[in-house]
Length: 116
Length: 111
Image (tube, rainbow over the protein chains, first blue to last red):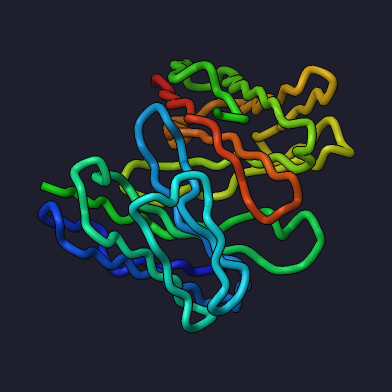
């Protein structure tokens, strides 16, 4: 079974702090993703990475950066946390290749971040 | 601008009856569609998918129907069980690794 783990389930930070969210997958997936989930908005893509040291902006990258130094690990960084970044953050990974299965993403349990 | 829309935020259904969840999309480049199920405080789990070359896919109690001309898909759960109470997300891909998600539909199965 694919396992995607996230470093924290719950996190409380103060406005202006730098925040690191870590994600690790154990299935040698090429692709990794960071989403945030907000009520009424579903899951919105922040950043994704299709290879080590490669990254691409998603739909809402402002205020975030990412790092992928190793294939299994994908970090999301909030450079200066703000209250509107209070959300559920979800990491996902998927297989490489060209078949339909590449589009199936496997998610971690999520990190509920509260910025005060 | 959301390219995948789930217009019903919630659905309540009696145990044993059918649950029908609907999803509409606007991007004609989408060619693969997925449904995910999410319990509170957990990540979404993959439920069922369908390729644009098909119009139906079944997996046990779950069936997904795709109407490409209407840009519409639906998920049928028969029979509904209490464990099906969750948030269901529709997602779509244009074969570029990324998924676009709908806002979700919260299903409550009443005993």
